[in-house]
Image (cartoon, rainbow over all chains, first blue to last red):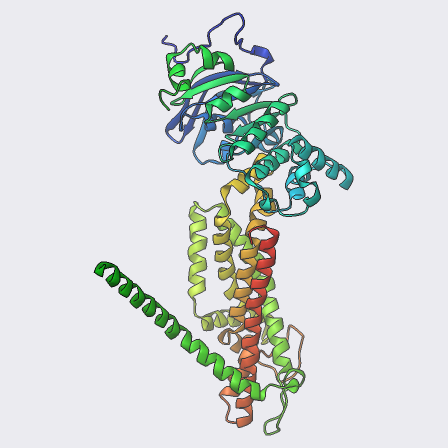
Length: 271
Length: 283
């Protein structure tokens, strides 16, 4: 059999597939939009409390992969998944799994910040309200506050919680979206190029935040920016034309990748 | 140099052309307003708002019954059309690609194009005839029927303008589809929908034909919905086509009040929209 998926190289200090300890366990996953195959036989294990970066050129399927972890692709007509994706050992595409419930446990931050046209407070409270996670007004307020603190936004907005979220700067809006996602206490945080529309200072703040958050969450981040992947992630997965080419410890991917294609990409020879 | 001059000359020519087109378009409006205000102002006084029509030949009197009647009829119409219209709009935008949504859209556009007198006949057939009675309800039903397609299409178009990222944001937090639509997408489009509703109200407030044989007319003050009801438009129509000088004056006054109501509606819509938009951070 010609191995379509290069398996990660085993070296003593390097990457060991998480196996049973994996938080997210993806096996032989194919993804289709109608007749078009977008992901081809992806097998990947993501460990808890680590930051996994997904890199690769535009259209390589990394965003699609990310969005299949919380079944956001379900709303796209014609989208279809084969193979399995398990979170904590439970196949999330099993008929018994409710995607609405899944999405509460797997938070997501989008490329373009998308605060609701409501106040800052109501943005963070939204997930708590719809999931009935706060039993009293005090608890609601407390959880909004702690979420905003976790997203390093509290000090900037505490005096104007009830003003429109759309008046915040781009970087603040993105941190608000992170706070909103954290409020419902997910285990996993998916980030789809969360800093691509931000200036360097705002980007740095998001990256610091990612670093802090990994103690409490399992984070998967899609990025176009290879320096960013190198800075924030523990593990990097390189996608190319719908295939997972290589997945390994980040320092290994950037210094001594086992695949020629990976090396060409991270050194900027293409993409 | 000559090229530049020629271009500048052409530019000012076109600007002048556009400007005069605007003037031509606005002239009828200016004349309508001028006549309504100048003729109406002479006849409008406090009595016009507080008194009932007087018997023929007797001077004075007012249209208190018709003013209240118009308010009742438009409220009835809104009560029927706003829920149905908004929910149909939500349906059309949520199931935009389906054949049934296309059918609903086509039906709404067709209904929108149906002459108002036909709508009146329809209301006559389904409400007046079975109950053997002209009534405010029949009038409200006719006006509501006219409003539904306007509100449905406005709602649909405004919902489609809300970025998909809003919906995704809500879904990603564990919202169901219905929840996402009603708690995020619909509120995001609300300022525009409100404006659409008020403009639709302003439009139907000026309708006469659908009321002629539904709400009919009533010389007396009435707030019972099962009885015939007077309205400004029908009253103006009756008075303007009547043979008496006094009636004509009253008709002008009625026209002025009607125009003022419509104008106030548009202003209120703009004001409300701006306030909502400020809350939404856009203004």
